[in-house]
Amino acid sequence: MPHDVAASEEMFIKHFSDPEKVATYAEGPRRYVPGLEALHTMTGLLLAERAPADARVLVLGAGGGAELAAMARAYPGWSFVGVDPAVEMLRLAEQVVGPDMDRVELVEGYIQDAPTGPFDAATCLLTLHFLPEPERIETVRQIHERLRLGAPFIAAHSSFPQEEAARDRWLDRYASYPVAMGADPEQVRQAREAVAASLNTFSPERDEAVLRAGGFSDVELFYAGFTWRGWVSYA
Ligand SMILES: C[S@@+](CC[C@H](N)C(=O)[O-])C[C@H]1O[C@@H](n2cnc3c(N)ncnc32)[C@H](O)[C@@H]1O
Image (cartoon, rainbow, N blue to C red; front, top):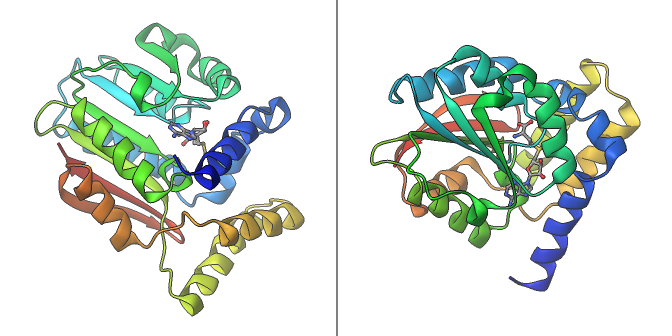
C-alpha cells in the first residue's frame, strides 16, 4: 500500500474512532445524505428480490449500525455479519441495532477479516468513497468472492461528475443540503473542503467500472441524491 494511501485511510479510521464524533455520528448521514431512510428501504427491497427469507447478509463498513438496524427490523429471518475497522463505531452499532443483535455478528477489521461465506447478499454503504482505486477494486473483489453466484450487492457512496466546473457545482449542492437540514454552516464548509481535497472522489462512470472490475455484472443505478449514488449489481 503506498504511503499516502495508508495515511488517508488511517485518518478516516481515527475520525471514526473518536468517541465524541461517534456519539453524534447518527445525525451526520441523516443531514448530509438526501433520502437516507429511503436508501435503506430500497437496499432491503433490492436484496430481497434475490435473497431467501433466511438470508445471510454481509455488511461492510457496518459501523454506526444504521443499515443493519433498518434491514434487521424489516427482514426478521435475515442474519448479518457486520465488518468495520473502527471499534467505537461497532459499539455504536450494538446500541443502534439493540434487540436484533442476536442476529448480528460484528467483526472488527477489513473485508479480509470477514468470514468467507458464502453470503446471500452484501452491502457497503457510505464507505467505498474513502478508498483509493486499487484498494476499492480489491475490496469489491473480496466482497464478490464471498457471495453466492448471482447474489445481489448494494454499493452507495459519494460519486459525482469530476470535470472541474461540474465538480464545484456539485460540491456546492452537496453542502447546500445539510445547511438546509439544520447543520452548522461552518462544519458544513469544512466538510465541503475535505471532500473537495479528497483524491478519492470518482465519477459515477468510474465507480461503475470499479464494480465491474471487482467481478460484478448487470450494474444498475437505483439511487441518486446530489453527490450520492447507489447501485445494485450481481455476483
Ligand atoms: C461514513 S461511515 C458509514 C457507516 C454506515 N455504513 C452508514 O451508512 O451509516 C464509514 C464507515 O466505514 C468504515 N471504514 C473505513 N474504511 C473502511 C474499509 N476499508 N473497510 C470497511 N470499513 C471501512 C469506517 O470505520 C466507518 O465506520
